[in-house]
Length: 115
Length: 107
Picture 1 (tube, one colour):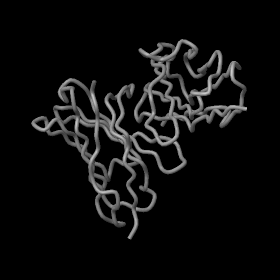
Picture 2 (cartoon, rainbow over the protein chains, first blue to last red; picture 1 turned 90 degrees about the vertical axis):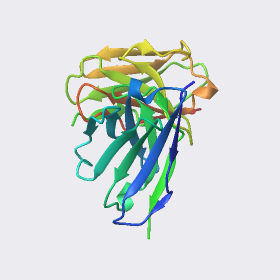
Picture 3 (spheres, rainbow over the protein chains, first blue to last red; picture 1 turned 180 degrees about the horizontal axis):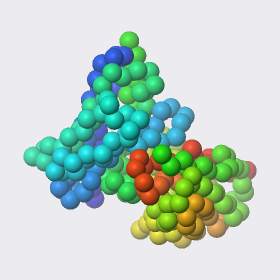
Picture 4 (cartoon, each protein chain N blue to C red; picture 1 turned 120 degrees about the vertical axis):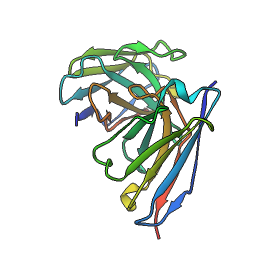
């Protein structure tokens, strides 16, 4: 059964870049689109964007100027970079399979932006 | 962006009750609507896709309906394990957007 696991720092300083990687197990990253979604504490879900194994991407316009997503097919991983973070970027970050319907999710990782 | 408005924001019902949650889109999204269940401290789980398609393994007490701008998630007989937040999500347009969520509690 496919599993997704994020990795990356849980604490990032303001103005720095948040970097997360999602490792896909028991599935080929080349078969699907892959998304990042976040949820600030106590708030609703926000779609950040998706990436395809070819490198094709689509980002939420609200974050587009700060977001970069990429895929490493050799490691079956995809990644998120969010630059110039502020406290408003503090959230649980999820990686998920799909671009229309998110059928498989990671457990989520809390990233706190604080000095 | 397409705004998704859920109601109510929270509800309290008894075990065995029929529960209905509504989701309204700010513009026509045909049937491009999914429903998720999120239990405390856990990732969301897909319940229903394409407005009314029950995902594999989801209990049959869950059902979805609607098209265009108005959608409904129904739990026909509320169980204690259904305590969670429920979110709708549209994919009729980019960016994908979610409703603000509905918290379901047991009375």
